[in-house]
Every structure is written in structure tokens, then in C-alpha cells.
Amino acid sequence: MAEVKVIGSWSSPYTRKVEMALKMKGVEYDYIEEDLKNKSPLLLQHNPIHKKVPVLLHNGKPIVESMVILEYIDEVWEGPAILPKDPYDRAMARFWVKFIDDKCIPPMWKACWSVGEEQEKLKEEAKQGLKFLENEIKGKKLFGGDNIGIVDHAANFIAYWFPITADFVGLQRLMTEEEFPNLYRWADDYCSHTFVKENLPDKDGYIAILKSRYRSIIIWHYLSLINYVTFLVRSPHAFPIYEYEFK
Image (cartoon, rainbow, N blue to C red; front, side, top):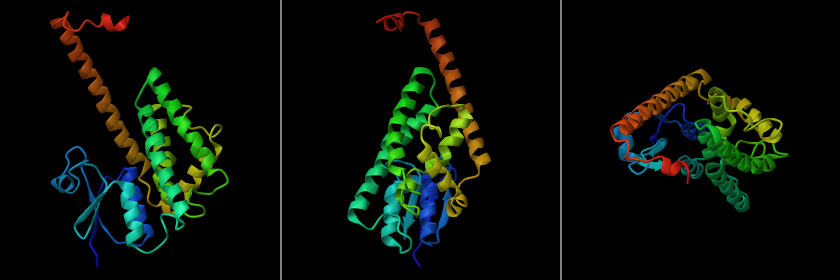
């Protein structure tokens, strides 16, 4: 029997989509939890370029990047299809995966941890991307049709992780049911799917991680402000900020 291992983080949407894909195919695997604050030699050995999770180890050979891993799983093991069989549909699925990764998730995540004008710009950027997804999912149960496919996996952050994060940080009016009814309905259908529901991280556990991250950000900003003020007091002419304020 082939040896399959997953190096991941239990709260990561990227790790979860890989685990879901393996379970959909009925593949048995060993799971290795990674401490992202103190990355292990195993992770650094098998993903020395990005140093990120997840990593799939198949007979000792590493495959990295979650969506690359999903395509690999679909090609290697039999079972429910993750990508469409039709070449055109397959190409379009890859397009939407990249679109979600490039145009939707980054501004949505960054908006959660930004404030003021920067946050508003990120919200608008995210909405522009979500409008295309809203139109794409119209009239469909899932992006994969009646069954969960690779685009649904790619958008798992939008369905589950983002609403929890946005609620935690108090981010409002980014993805509302009034503005994105089709996406809202898809997210509910996706998260309510028996298979998906069984493989999502515990909400309270994820919120605990968010609290830790939030405290770290507050402490970082506080220390940065202290260092900045100390620097100005010691060298008041070293960085003439007024030149930048009024240009």
C-alpha cells in the first residue's frame, strides 16, 4: 500500500481542502500537525521554497501548493472526480480556481486586518471579484454542479473561514446576502453538505486562534509605536515626517 502523509495545520482552509479530497477518494493517510510558529525540519525539508503547509507526501515524494495537490490526487486515485472530465470544463475550472486565489481571497483576508481608507479599498476590490463569482454560481447548487468539485474546494475560505473572521474583527458589509444572494446560498449549501460539515475545523477553536493573532497584531503595533517615538525623541531631525505630510 502506498504511504500517504499530509503535513498541515488543522485550522487552515488549504490543509482542509487537501484532507477532504483524500477522503473523497477513500485514501488513507497519516496526518502531521505543523507548528507554524516553529516550523519543523520535516516541513523545511519537503517545502524549502515556500515553507508553507500543506505538503502531501506520497511514497516519500513531496507535492506542495494545495490546488496542485488536489489535481495530483485526482489523477492518481480513483473515486469521485475533483476536476471535470470535459477538457473545456476542466480549463474553466482551473481559471476560476486561479481567479479565486488571486482576486478574491487576498483582499478579503487583508480587509479583515486593515482599517480606514485601506480597508475600504480592499473591500471594494474584494467585491469586484465576488460579483463575478456571484454570476458564475447563479442557477447552480455548487460550482461543481451537483457534486463538490475543485472550484468549491478553492472557495472554501469564502464559505466558512471568512464569515467567522469578519464577524470576529467586526468587518461589515463586504459579503452580504442582499448583495450576493447566490454566493450566500452556495456557502450555506457547501457548509451544510454532510461531507464538508464533518471536515470543517471547530468554530470555537478557530476563534481562539484568531484571538491569539489579534493580540499579536496589537502588541506589534504598540511596540512599533514605542520604537518610533523613541527614535524621534533621540533623533528628531533624522526623519522629517512633515515633508511627507504636505506633499
